[in-house]
View 1 (tube, rainbow, N blue to C red):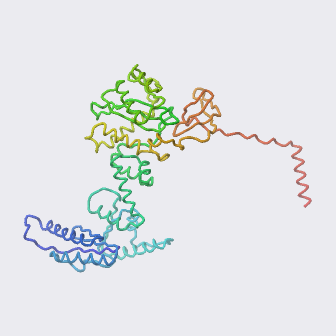
View 2 (tube, rainbow, N blue to C red; view 1 turned 90 degrees about the vertical axis):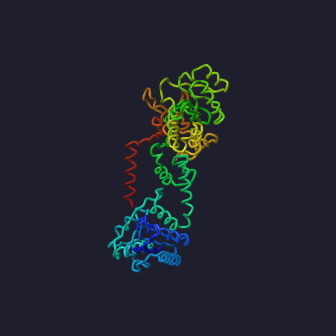
View 3 (cartoon, rainbow, N blue to C red; view 1 turned 60 degrees about the vertical axis):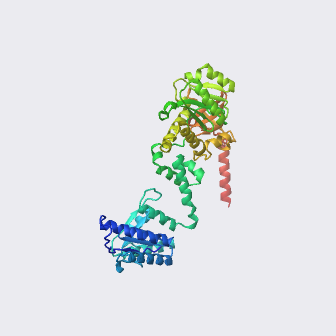
Amino acid sequence: MARPTVNCFQSPVSPRRRNVSLLEETILLRKREVMTVRAAVGEALILHYMDDVLVCAPNDDLLSHALDLTIDSLVAAGFELQEEKIQRMPPWKHLGLETDSAYVAGVVSRAEQAVLSEVSNTALFNLLSKLVNLVSHQEQQFYVMHIRSHTDLPGFIAEGNRRGDALAAPVEMAPFPNIFGQAKISHQLFHQNAPGLVRQFHLTREQAQAIVAMCPSCQQHTLPALSAGANPRGLNSCEVWQMDVTHIMSFGRQRYVHVSVDTFSGAVYASAHTGEKSSDAMKHLIQAFSFLGIPKSIKTDNGPTYTSKEFRSFLQQWGVEHKTGIPYSLTGQAILERTHQNLKRVLSQQHQSLKLETPQIQLSKALFTLNFLNCTFENLNPPIVRHFRENCQLQLKAKPPVMVKDPATRETEGPHDLITWGHGYAFVSTPSGLKWVPAKWVKPFIHKTPKPPAEAPQVASAAWRRRKRQTLSF
């Protein structure tokens, strides 16, 4: 793409606006004339900065037309152009290179008086040869500026970089900025994690991680995509739930947020209440049942909210088994504690755009992000899909035998059948029943094949003499 420049022209004196300095008036007049020409030429790119004008176009005809219009417009406005400063053909005497590629910036800055070695790519060799010739014959100084791509920084430099990318992009990559832009807008709205962007917009892992890394809210509140520890969990949806209350002080009177999570799918439901009494817990569960279904069992702590007769009677009416953990032990409900952490992080990420909304609206948007958008790279199905549709990836078709370490005796027992396993946990079938154990305690069972019996010394000696006799006979 050719790049003629028009620079170093003299300015007319206008007596109309004496309260404005001559420099400010000149810049405003040039900018108005350039904008008029820019609207008339269409696809051509015209950049104006101080006393320089850069004209770029995809073909020579449009380039010549745009350059002539620019010169005629400036002359008609009263500017006197110096003909020796109008550059129509390379080598350019006044060269400024702006690029969003750190590789290109490094090559150009080292190209002067460089010697090219053998390059297998013919097209690349031709481009590098032209670059070395252009830079080596440059009489005036030139400057190479590296601009970071895909940034929202204002200014004519970033805008020119975006317009240059649009003109230089090949046809097959034309939809890419739209998809990437949609992913950025969606992340600014919901702040989903990188696997969620990969699943929704079919981006590469590096592109999705770049969007998350560029978000200032996600830098302060990163959302990990790791599973919880070795807590007992269900093998299907609505088998085992964990339930507890967390406090979100920004909600005011409704700061008591009751949270329920399905231990199989990771689907979450949360509701804001004015207290943590049994009546509030029962209201929360009725809403959760309508959203996720009725579980077989619910695990809670030993707090007065869940040990009251009203709460136990409520669960009996719905046919739900109630289990409690070890008193004052947070690790007994590690899945729920991780869910509390994730919920608060998403609320913090979305707080800037929802700070004037009610707690119910803020919770609803955060739950939509956690249940419908976020996922992991190991399984791109979000929690709500895993909850309402049986996922064959989470179940083992075969039950391989494994060896399990007993923490009490520190001895390895087995072999036992492995029912299922995941990140950090395993579910095995032992003679005493089914057990959830940490994955580090489980090792594959390897069958030991007996060695063949060794030959007697007399037999081995006779065989050796027989082979020696056959060799000598030949």
